[in-house]
Image (cartoon, rainbow, N blue to C red):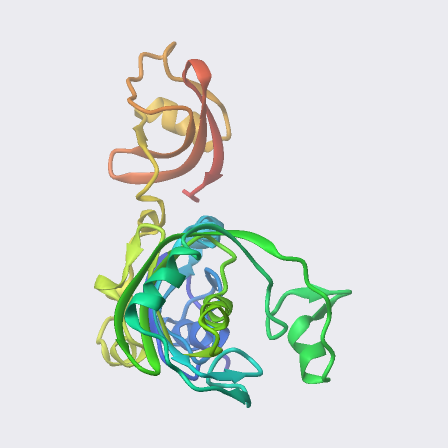
Length: 299
């Protein structure tokens, strides 16, 4: 008899293990929690580990916010060896000697801080004519790709023991750390690929409360390990509504805060909305205190 899935709401800050695709990890967590609805918030390559926020139930309504968020990583770059994929999963295509000093590396890193352009890798899920680039790459086909604008907010050298370079990176959405590692290697004249990649931050979420799949499966009440839905929204200002206004808000009606005497201390923009301790959803706060419902939580 097929097991009936249940409605589960919350966010799991998963410590994704090496060797799992993001979807594999999601399916396993969903099975452990017996959850009816779930989604992840952007992929991590199978060889990468670390923070993969998984959204369940009502939290899936807000997963797009994390797709847009900045990300933080720690990575080990192997200088002197280029691979087909830019990481350990590819075949070696070139080996060069490494003579870079720490000072030379620091000088090169300066070039990659701030707004930069990046050419997406062929081994990526980006689509061309309905077909993922990695499918072309596996057929030995290389396509022209336009450079994209990304931003490296922080790039810090943590350690250097040739040929291994350990970096901490905070970057905008759409940044490929594999490409960053390869480009740094190219700038140093020796090539490079990623030996290790671990994500430690997504937006306001960090690695502090991550849970492994093993810990989730072993917990007597695994749903207790979920963060509340509003963990995804902590960076947004908060507005609290009285009961009558909350009822109308959940019906999709706009609320004129000033006219109703509802105090608030927030600038126009994205807002999280509550009645007491209950999250009602998100809204856009417009000029003159007009609150327009956006994504709502079911009653």
